[in-house]
Image 1 (cartoon, helix red, strand yellow):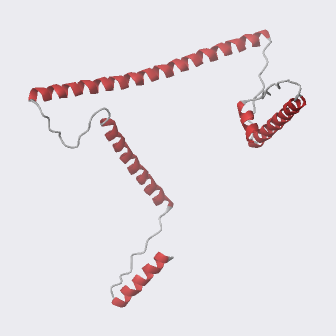
Image 2: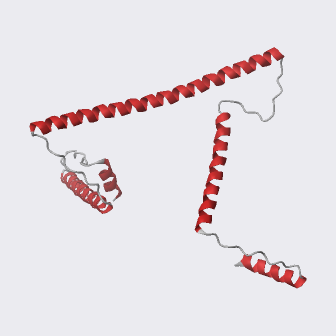
Length: 198
């Protein structure tokens, strides 16, 4: 509101002075124009990001100096220094390539292990089907948010009851030189965490 007021006062002053020029009307964009503008902006942002990444990647492992640094030594020493730097950059690049290859090999091995295990399970299932002993496992239905909350509350209530029993046992043993046992929580870690929070 303050900014509009300033703009309107400025407009009035310009009108009084005779220097006011009406700005051209801004035509609202159509849906197609908005989509095209958004795509163009996204493409430009992606290109800028790719340039930044390329620039960052090209400088990895190198001491990038905007201006050529003065080398104090003979031309032979400078050539040797350049050679040493090139060798080191080569080592680092080979190390990176090796790490990428190793990662790909590990992924391929994991996929192979999973395929072998699925094959074993399927062969076992077929054998059981042939023998007539196969029982379809029950489908596991994912819990809704309400069901998770109810389960957490039930676990918390059970844990509280067990804790009260343990406290009652400890209180009853006071003066009898009996050390109470530590109550153990039976359930998942999530249920225990939920019980502790409640």
